[in-house]
Image (tube, rainbow, N blue to C red; front, side, top):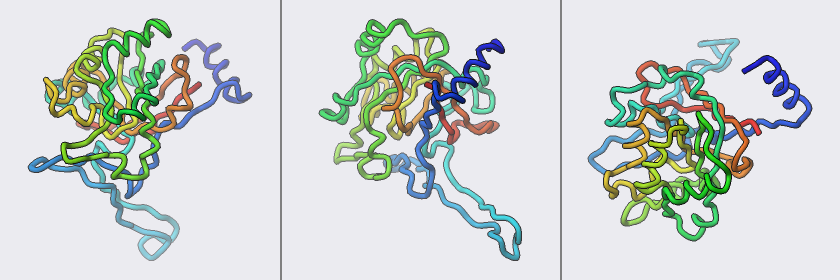
Length: 257
């Protein structure tokens, strides 16, 4: 970025013309985590063990040991998370310039209010481009559904019924669109995973994981505050741990608007 552009951004933040929006859900022992059916292994909720807290083990400092899965809370999916991307990048190998980029917000809040299992289609994505213009190179597509309002209630957030979870996400055509669009770097959602709750029954199963990660692109889950973003014009900053061999990482995700 040219020096003048950096100066303009700095000044805009200082005088309130630009704002930083935190798109990260709080991470704690009560943060909802994905639940897979048997016999698959499940990730644990976050837990912590105190090393010292201003006591004999550390009189002037406090610190803890954390246990949590790579895919806990607001987190990044790296390509190696899925079998189709297993030969691609781990978290530490993602070029930093791909973690910063323009935002497109696809708002289907009203549709999801009527149908919690709403499926985002290629036609929906084409319609967004027709209305707001072509997606810019290096863009992150964020799927606004209103699901973030459920984030403090694990049962409502996972929304599992007798036939499995009912949550919104792309259908197969939408997943292909995201993976094949030349300007899309990643896809972000408010839900627990980048695929719809019903995606295990699609052909192929879990198409966003299958196509998007297989194409060397990235996923973001459990985002917050998408209602504060415009459809076009924001800039995303994703900050995962630089975890060697990491299939994913809890991340702080910020937007400049």
